[in-house]
Image (cartoon, rainbow, N blue to C red; front, top):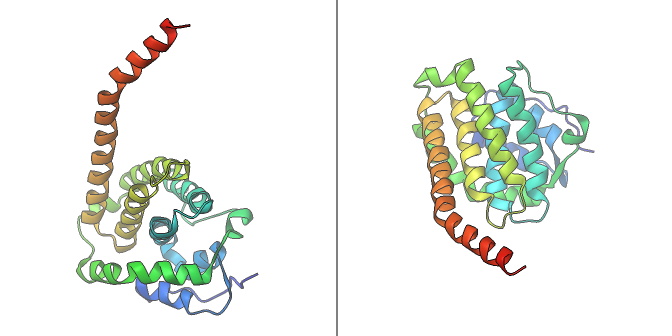
Length: 212
């Protein structure tokens, strides 16, 4: 198994940490390695990482479960305001192929660096305990949706989770607000879609029940 006892990259940008992880020679990338690599930025950085990777390779069968379960655990710890990130051994042993990781990171590196350049600490009220508890609740619900067997249903939840993680890592309240607005828009869209299809479903159900 990969040695998890690497020096954390707290002095590096998020994109630099991603590159350093990909440069290692071990064929498997274990979640435990990531936890240590991100150091004190663990909560936000891991949410960002898992969200990005899920958005890129989430179509691979089983991937959303491997990535979604740790997000649920991370989000829960945000809700209960745990000071240090903890993941069980079974989660730390979860792994991805490092070559697939490199390919996925290459696809997001350019936009990630662009956002890093313009991001800065702001709207710090979105970094309070209450705000992070709300972020945890939202991300837990999104991660549960992420794990459902819905074709193509992983992309939007993954990107929103990644945005929350980035906002937390950078202490950028504007990005957190954008992620919350995106969540509200998705929830509104789902509600409107349900309101539109509900009458047809009810009519179909009544037609079926009337025949039996």
